[in-house]
Length: 204
Image 1 (cartoon, one colour):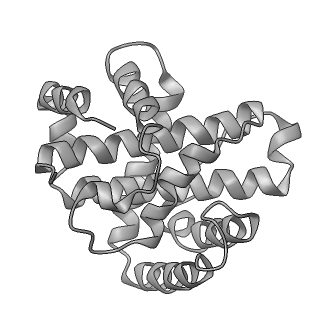
Image 2 (spheres, one colour):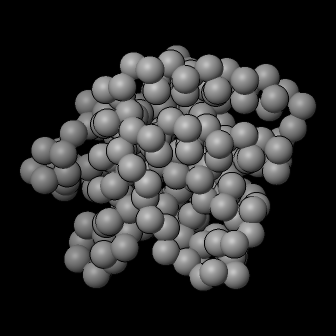
């Protein structure tokens, strides 16, 4: 089925908050979630898809965690950290989109990643390392670093750092898709009930 623009915005927000949920899990608890990564990372490797669902890999059901995280943050459940990450990622995406040089570099790097993905699964350490560097060289340069809070024993591990940066890039990608389908901060302020209804109605 083809999703409406509101449903597509809701899907992208679920992806954004899944990326935030999983980067926090990696940084704070050292958790690895293959299913979530296999859902999110393909969005970095696909362009001009016919429907929002086509940007994301399988399985889709991890997006229910992103939906729950969005609803928790925006229904007063006192998740200030989740709200902070989402606001920062949306800001980074907006600044990145206005920087033609960084956007050109991002497209080149993602093209290289697509070729590499023909030889590895999307969350292979080699691919994560390349995507993490891409995040550093593009999104992170657009609007400054996002300070990720976590335990030193995890954030000092190269694989965890690469995983966190890749998930941040997935968050930026979700934010860009949200905007591409008509999302803006006024939707979040004044049409959130409509978005929440769409989120609850999505069959991931």
